[in-house]
Image (cartoon, rainbow over all chains, first blue to last red; front, side, top):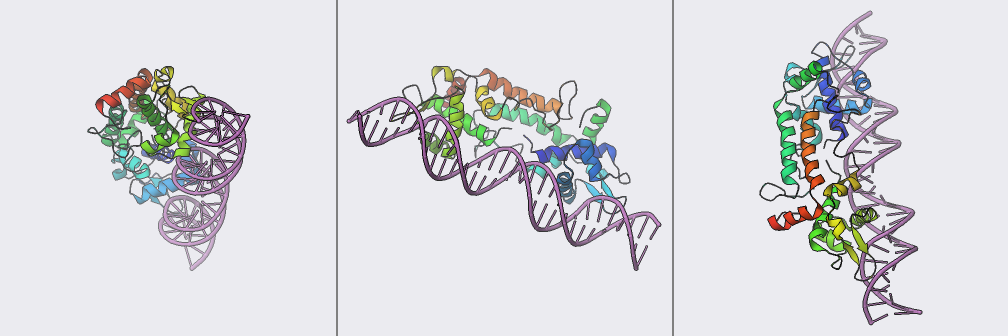
Length: 141
Length: 141
DNA sequence: AGATAAAAAGACTTTTATATCTTTTTTTAT
DNA sequence: ATAAAAAAAGATATAAAAGTCTTTTTATCT
């Protein structure tokens, strides 16, 4: 479903959502160590998210990454689409160039239902909301 | 969700399900041309499926690939798992090494619903049943 | 029996995704 | 002002997936 890049990005953003604020920033290394993902690779992803205003950063001593209030209120979907592109939720599960309700592939109906649920969730819930669930329910990232 | 290899394999098997029988065989080239997938690559996949008794073949003149009655009655799931491995339907959507109902990742519930729905379908329906749907309802492969 | 047509097998190439390393820029603290 | 610490940017490396090509085997037909 998601690329490794996307998985790392989602996890990093959720981690930042409950760990950071505009004056509580965190470095790549800490995130990478905590999530057990390759640091330099994660750095690239965070840069990309930063360029797209889904993550904030400040350079220099005591700098680091964090989520602004605006960042926290973005739907998680934006993070996913920033990394894996907007097609992740709509591309045909069999890779057919055209596949829709009108002209479906054999797995279209099931694939659609399944993905629609996911899409609803990440499209409606904000990063902050999902992160709150993580802390409240003790989920793993 | 599925690798390209897996997509090609599913499509090829469904195609064979309504195009072939033990004495109506089809060559790689025809399948590849029809489905618009790379021929030599598809050949490798068909070999793998053949080795795993999900597809049948005969060599030599007038030889080719086909589905035996036994092949037709396998659940499509077997094809998927033969190519992409048994983890496709259960691996954590965020790539966490442990993620289950007891210890879920933030997307676990939604991801579970999606994949479980798909799994039910490809696990219960046979290749022949899905192929029948393709011809009856004029679906695309 | 021999020729041929097809899959099987194996080696190889290309592309894409993942991962690392180095240099530059910017900010902060001294 | 300077030094240092951090992200940004760019270049490079490695691994995995996708795709191709060549040779071998085997079945079929004449």
